[in-house]
Image 1: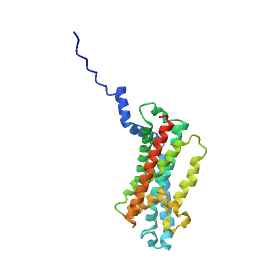
Image 2: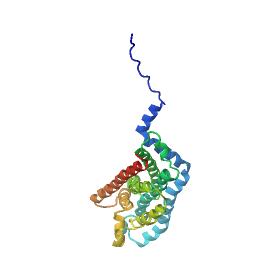
Image 3: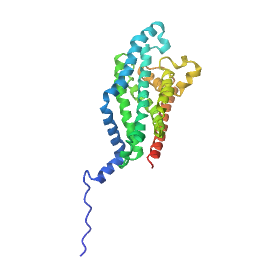
Length: 283
């Protein structure tokens, strides 16, 4: 007499099958958690670099240089606001971009070349896209945290008179991603460190910082260098930040262009990053 087929036993909560299914679904967040735990180990260094340095810049400019500028220049030159209110959004955006230049270069090289930390998770069900996504999620959390702290400092200086000033935190995060994701794709393509990242800092990051309308309106710069601002995530983010923090008057069309530019650059960087991660991990 043939018995009825026995039903398969239910899967245990921590069985390999269940763990693999969770990894396939939430792998990017699992990897982001690991990166954030590593960041926690040098949290004070992150704080001093990401917040302390820009805050010192803000204090020097707001208390030192701003006194001279406001005394000898009419506020109309800076959109009808004080000099510190003018530069505060630029420093907030620049801090995020500087962080992107750090987090999306050497850690990516470390993952592929030096300690090869990307390959361990890849031996699990995590895909290259999830590993890349987890790295991006963790750095995005850093953008948000440092921007919130920095914005509080800006508000304490009275440099954000608008009620929409908090929106500059989101703008800074978007600007950091729009610069960092294409850079991450480039870092993922490098197989030997020959000083490429130092060249990026010297010939890309610093010129963008200096020629993106950070300290003076972009249209006051010579025409020969003004184009640097037009292609710079710092300038597009700074202009949006000024709209948020003190109601900087600009055409709504130009505001839309800023948003589209930053989103488009971030999307392009994500597409290229995924492609490079899959290529480097052999899938």
